[in-house]
Length: 420
Image 1 (cartoon, helix red, strand yellow):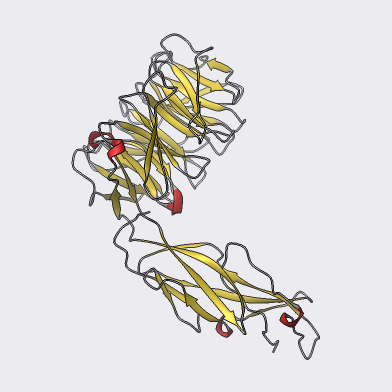
Image 2 (image 1 turned 90 degrees about the vertical axis):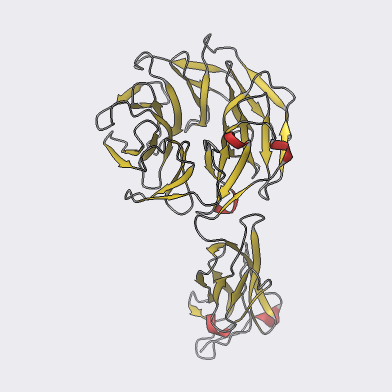
């Protein structure tokens, strides 16, 4: 058997064996040890879940050897996770809160050499934590998105400002440069955060808080709602007032598209699809639409319950688009070919917005039901209410840092986070 002299640990980037004394040769083949890798490199588990780490030695002849049981495994914080010293079996500890994110360094050593990586542990699935921030007082946070800077950004529909939320839940606000209350928000391809203003403007804010607004090219009474990054490097948005789909370049040049959109459609949600197009909802007409980057529109209504009122839409992990039907208490799935399947949620729930999460499922807000819902790609629905303040009017939702799902509570001027 090859002699292990260099060891491994779990780290974000594997560190190679150092020094000439950290190499050895197989007595039979003459192969030299070139390093030891540990997998998985970056892991996230729930309280009570187990995870097996694996150590693999690599040799200069291309061969490998499982050395998991030859490493001595440790956890830097056993209140977060423990690990069996000779097997690499880690177990997440019981945690009471979602924030701040709990991590521990898992290490595997042999003869003083090794590497390390951070293991993230989160509470049980469905655990909710609401923020307690005076900065949010009196606000009406509507939509929320993960920014390119690793923070969450939330719009505010009752005053001209935007909130930035750090991964630990610390909230700060920006007021300078806004002419109107904000509604839609998303991360842009230029490293900025883009937003819509309810009175008819678009804007971008840098991670440092510098705001630029754009109105040239917008139709009068446009009422832009939702904005998203497109596959073409631009931003795309819905105009509920002017019945247009809009496109804005990172430089601020706006183009509007109306051809092919039925009048008074009630355009609301929009997202980039897996097919290289943009997909949007028509809330008033109960339809889902598709627009190519060139502006060619196709509308779909077959299979969608009449009067369903689709609002939020997102790309799912299964290659389909998923949307929330607020009036019919259903979650819809539409293939890129336009085939629709609907799944019922609790009556009277009013699902509004929806997002894809790290667990491979879709998560959505129930504005009237006061719940966060989860639906698998197969259509199995689970609803969560514990920890959510009554009458919160849940609205915005997005996948955020550490794989947690964040949501807005405009009815209580608050934000929340739930573990998927």
